[in-house]
Image (cartoon, rainbow, N blue to C red):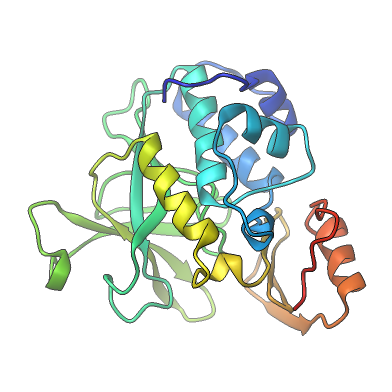
Amino acid sequence: MADMDGFDLSAYLERIGWQGGRRPGLGTLRGIHLAHALSLPFENLDPLSGRAPSLAPGDLTAKMVHGRRGGYCYEHNTLLWLALEALGFPVCGLAGRVVLGAPTPWSRPRTHMMLRVEVPGEAEPYLADVGFGASGSLLTPIPLTTGTESEGAGRRHRLIARPSEGPLEGPLELLELQVYDRQEQGWVGQYAFTLEPFAAPDYEVFNWHVGTNPRSPFTRRPYLQRTTAERHLALDGDRLTETGAGGTVTERRITDETEARRVAEEEFGIVVPEGLRLLA
């Protein structure tokens, strides 16, 4: 990612509360990844307002670092990419198909953004992703290898190799990220991907499609997420769901616009743009 115009590494690290070292190593990668995941909320208020958010470094810095806003996968992972490259990590963009809740691995387009990060001193690269926006998302990066389980910040993940079948049959190995669901007592797929690299212009196209298509869920209802050490909070439309650290789930509906704005600002830490209605 060559363009860093307007990105402020020191301000970013202050925003996520990272006071550790800046040398490119595994401890730095894990620490910054976790700090980002616990500090910056997931939100789709720009698409809900009728526009795709800007992925320009200066605009991301103004919105997510200096402003009380979050973003969705392209914004979060572009911001992390900028920070990691500024720290000296070699980074490559990836793209996956969300399989969570999908009938087949090819039911949805390949529009989710993740990162492949090389770590000095480590034999294998790592999968980094601070923008999935789900209770099973990565809080810490995991080795980009199949056959091993990884635990980070109380969540268990693994990568498996999926058979290349149907429309996805091809020469590249298909990987799937899975999370262990305590309630279901089993592994649940999150997204499937190959190691084909993607560049900034690819994400601009994905971003425009997801952020403006009237059939995209992100343009039709609010989708907010926030993770802390104690809980994961999600607002999907008018449904507010809280998942505790032990896996317990509570849910309630929000039917009042004033209450929805209060929840967004106080519980998620997001300043709702003036004039935007969260509830239909």
